Length: 254
Image (cartoon, rainbow, N blue to C red; front, side, top):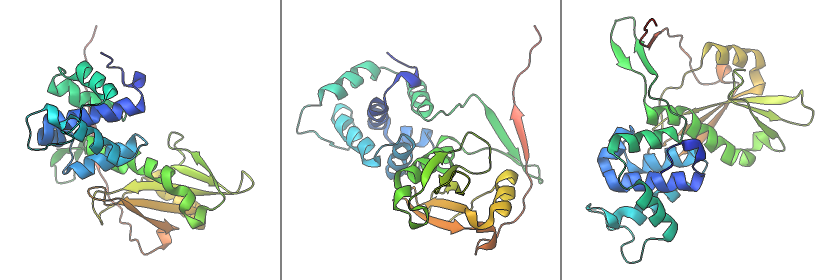
């Protein structure tokens, strides 16, 4: 059995996710922080750079093999490559299986963060589902449809998510020194809050008309997007908030 996610091809990751959802159903869905199956398909599908329906198809493939109320594709034999994955991962325990699916998107649950408000209440920061919605899934959604956005017609895309420059994508038009900056955010529903970091806010104020906020909405049902040019001077009203971020770890002297 291969448990190194970097060694698992994208199609196999999709198959494993479908197997996980077929085997554990609503329990597995909740463990990952999703509210509906549609949300899981959309978020994990886009995060892995695939069609969301592919995960549903793989779940349907495995449904007849488990005692649940869904019939799935019960009128035909399971496909060979899916059966191979089933045999390899069928005995994986629940916690390890959930951890494997989380790892496909680079999620490390060993790092625990707690947000403490001024009132002193504490809560764990958003888990796997929320982090994918606000991050990787929304970014991959943008990558998949950016060529259809009129404002970026003829632009070359450069992924800058790991560069710490205050935006996720550089859309280069013609000369390399002429570009648009795009910061991507995602939300579960048709409306909700989006947050800019101090660095993102600073860059948005500096670039003005060349800075775009791209918001992917409604991951829980069917994602769509809204584009905000020069967001600090748009209809959006940003309010400054302050939070204390506590990183918890355990220290031992050796």
